[in-house]
Structures are given as C-alpha cells and as structure tokens.
Figure 1 (cartoon, rainbow, N blue to C red):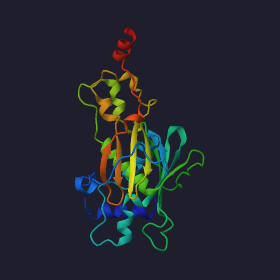
Figure 2: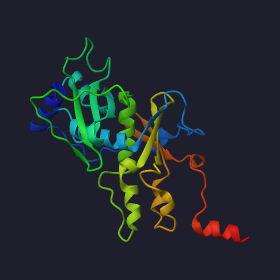
Figure 3: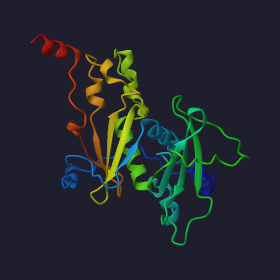
Figure 4: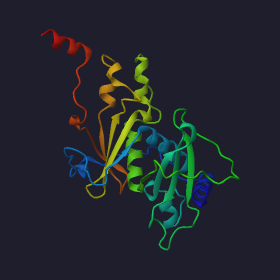
Amino acid sequence: MGRAAGLLLCCALTGCMTARNHVRYAPAEEAAWFKFGDDLPEKGRIELSGTRAAAIQLALEHFLPWNIRPPAGANRSDICIHQRQSWDVETAPGKEGTTLVRFSLSPGACYRWGPPLDMEATYEVDVRNGRLLEKDPMQPPPELPREGRLRLEGNVAAAIHLALEDFLPGEARPPEHSRPEEACLYRPDSYAVTAAPGPEGVVQVRFTVDEEACPTNALWGSSGALASMDRTVHAVDIRTMRILAVGNHSHLRPAVQGPAEDALSRSR
C-alpha cells in the first residue's frame, strides 16, 4: 500500500495522539465574514454521486482515520501527510458493482523536491454492504479505468468528508418508531454531493437526496426525517478544517405537494 500507509500503521502502534472530536465549528465571531450566495459557485464545481462519496468515505477511514495524529516531534513532511487536504482522490467504477478509490499525494504537497514514488494507495469498495474488499498483498493494486474516472483535489475531498461526517455521522441511525422506508435517509450513498471552491480558502458542499437511491415521495407524512436530512450546504474552511456555517438553498429543491395537499387543491 506504500510508504504512507506504512507510516500511518507505524504511528498507530507508537502512541499517536487521538482526537476526541474531529468535526469542529469555527467560533461565531470568526465565521461572521462568510456569506452564502444564491447558489454554489459555478467555477470548479464538482458533482459526485452518493455511491462514490460513500466509497471514498469508507476508503479514507481506512487509509487516514480521523483519530490518527503524527507523534510528538514529527517533522513538517510527516505532519503534512497526516492531513487529509494533502491527498488527491480518484474514483472509478470497479467490477461487479464495486467502486475503486485511489489516494495520491497532491502535487507540490509536503515535499519540496517531490515525494517518494510509492505515496499512494488503491481500494476496492463494496458500498452496498459497507466494506472494503480484501486483496492479495502479492498482487498489484487494481488499475482505475479511464472511463468514468473522476479526480478530486485534496482540499475539495477533505471538505466533502468533513461536511458529510457532520451531516450524517457514521453512527447515525433511524430514530425509534420511524417508518421502514425512512432508513435510506440514513445512508450516505443516498445523497448526491455538489462541491465548489470559493471564496478563497473555503469549499462549499451541498447534499441532495438521490431520488433513485431514496425515493422521497414515499416519505410524506413521515416522522419529519426528510425535512431535517434533505437540507444543507456546508461551508468548510479548509485551512483549519473547521465548518464556518451550515445553511440551505431552498430553491434547489422545488416545493412538491404532499398527497393531502394535492387532494385538497384538486377539490377546490
């Protein structure tokens, strides 16, 4: 898996510092300068399916877990490679419905004269069952096909995953007494992701229910989970990896009448 993964394993075995809470918000007085626009900026906008976002999340939690920190006395390069912003991400369809995810050090990150040649890792992810597929350590990692390949710059990928962990934490479960059809709202692969950089140092991340993965017309009259889940745009300060603000672009999802409202309008 290369030098990076080896370093992370070594760090884990030699007493790395552990972060208790990896999702942080900027204090209100520091975040007041940021203002949401009517929509995400067009320049640099990235569209990501829920399946790919979930695959990257699963792979990244194995490659660079939230609780891994460099040991005391680590040099600048080793500190840098423990930052999620330092790693570009590529993803492409795999075989039999899997998703391939590759992490590689962003050009110019961490090493002035260029990183070691083996600073990358590739995973094959079964998103539906929430697991990484094991591979023969003696075999080379699978190659990502050109068709359907998508590349995320490290800052954007890190912002997406911080926002996703705030929007839908890994331990999120449907509330007690919720309807069975609401369960899909608590799966990260049920949400399409749109991300866009700007203003400088900020990446905005929007989550929208993927109607194919989680049809919302079956959820009218539910416990309110739809209203609370299908809502947000996160603004992430990638320099400090903190969330500046959480808002919603209400115009992005047109108002659709529920069954009761629809019947009422027809009766008039």
